Each structure stands twice: as structure tokens, then as C-alpha cells.
Amino acid sequence: MPTSNGLAESAQQQSIASRRPECIVPVLVTIATMSQDKYPYRVEGVSGQLMRHLLIELDNLATAPTGQQAQQQHQRRRLRDLRLGLLCGLADHCDLTAPDTAALFGQLWQLTAASIDGGGDVQQARATLAQLRDRAAEWPEVAAAIRAT
Image (tube, rainbow, N blue to C red):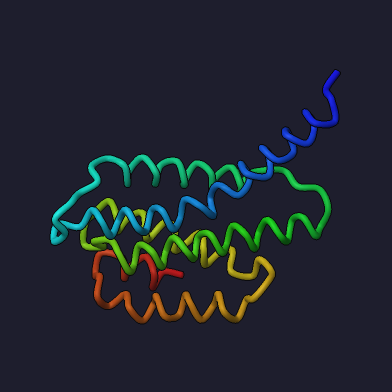
């Protein structure tokens, strides 16, 4: 039978694990910046591994069952905000002329646009997407996916 200390540790571990995506986005942005060719150092393979892990976490969050309406709204808002953060990080720090990155950006854009009304500050989320849409002219590889939504 678990002790109360064991239950507290388990709850703390679950809380930490549930916040993992919020930690990965800024780390990924930093690594993406560091891995650019113009910098004297590179982080080979780490960006891709973190990206795969983050996408799995986002998919898990999108498909996780929730109970009450307030929990559902919080989860939708959290997912939308994580996607927006990743989109902004990709736009600011990655080469969106690379086919794989452009495809990822386009897919993430579509998912984010579809979930924009997930609660919270919807106006801010829409404004962020509008700014990204305006910048899309810089990246013909992603402009078509953005215009489709």
C-alpha cells in the first residue's frame, strides 16, 4: 500500500510530466538557433529528436481524454498555445525554405488554425496567426498551406 509520501511524489512526477511540452518548445527554439550554419557551433541530431518528442507530446495532449468542460477548455487552450509557440519558433529560427521544415510548418499551421477558438485569449492567438500569415510571403514553400486556411 502506497504511503502518503509516495502518493505526493507520484502526483509531483505527473505534474512535472504534464508540463514537459511547455519546457521543450523554448529548448527547441534555442537549439534551432544554435544549429544554424552561421554559428560556430552545431547541435547535430538533437533538434530532430526534440521535435519528434514534442510532436508526440502534442499528439498525446490532443487525443488525451478529459473530464469536465473546464478541463477540456484548458487542454484545448494549452494545446493551441503550444502550437502557436512552436510556429513562432519555427518562423523566427528555422529555415522554412527546407522542404521538411516547410511541410511541418504547414501542418502545424493547419492544426493551429483549426483550434484557434480553444478558449483563453482568442484575440491574441488570431493576431499571432495573422502576423505569421503576413510573413508567409517570405516562404513560398509554406504560403500555399497558410492561404488554404
